[in-house]
Amino acid sequence: MALKTVICGTGGIAAAHAQAVRASERVELAGCCDVDAARAAAFAQQHGIPAHYNDLAAMLKAVQPDLVQICTPPSAHTTQVIASLEAGAHVWCEKPLCGSLADVDRIAQAEARTGKTVTTVFQWRSGAMGKHVKRLIDEGALGRPLIGLCQTLWYRDAAYYEVDWRGRWDNELGGVTLGHGIHLIDLFLWLYGDWREVSAHAVTLDHAIQVDDVSMALVQFENGALGSIVNSVVSPHQETRLRLDFQRATVEVAALYHYENADWRFSTFDKSPFADLVSAWSQPNAVTPSGHNAAFADVIDSLERGERPALSGLESRRALEFITALYKSALTGQIVRRGSVTPDDPFYHALNGTAGQL
Image 1 (cartoon, rainbow, N blue to C red):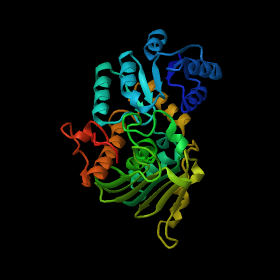
Image 2: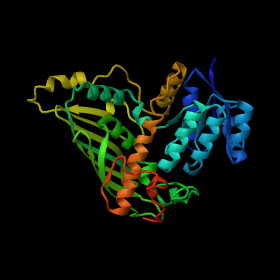
Image 3: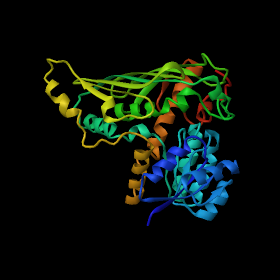
Image 4: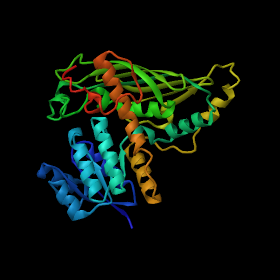
């Protein structure tokens, strides 16, 4: 029997979720909801969804879904995620899952209480090449990680921030670091391992908003590697780029919102004893591009096996803990160590430490 899923929130990103369901033969899209009833109705008609609602609680009661997909603005996520868990559904939630470690831990408590899981949409982990590189790293084929460059260089105009849920700490919950850079940050941390400490700047350079439109960070990893992270929505030439230098090779990917195998490159010194391995390293066993379709398939695979999805629980918390530390460093001028933001710290409860504007 197909899993029954619903979509909560029918704005722009919801179309990618509907497409992911259509790409799967294992899932039935049984309903959608939006506070704008007309928009919900139009979305249902466009995607062939049999029922639409303007209230999540009503949809949960009527449909009793196995999986809820949350596509609403960030400030609504925590309440909606917990309501879905308590209704007996698993959750696949758009990034950012929430805007504080306090809310992440509240969600974790609800998972434990209900026995259901919450997975964050971090689709950059879903592609075949990203998984292939992870295996090579874990097997030690590339040697120790040394230097990583993680760059999300995008552009958003003034009209982008005129949407009512963007640009303030109380609605978007964070700026470019949280809303845009989080995808590549998650991939970077997944590939390079646990981080030790971060020093950062986050500023507003070219938009009339409260939150950051540029951030830069220097991170040291537990394995000794160093990383540089740049996030921007003021870069007219848009690119998402990750460069990873290991002892034996450099691995790079350059794309925009998703990647294919051809977007990755392996290189080493021509005279290196490992040069003849580069062609072998660069050939994974699959060609699946990253994106919502692949990420959704990963979630469904896990649920059908009765396993916790890979990007739930502590893995979902990992990127937000780092971003919390990045903001704390930027707003206080301190070097922040992993694990140091605890419930007695104001940054545990809000990414800006309730400090207001940058």
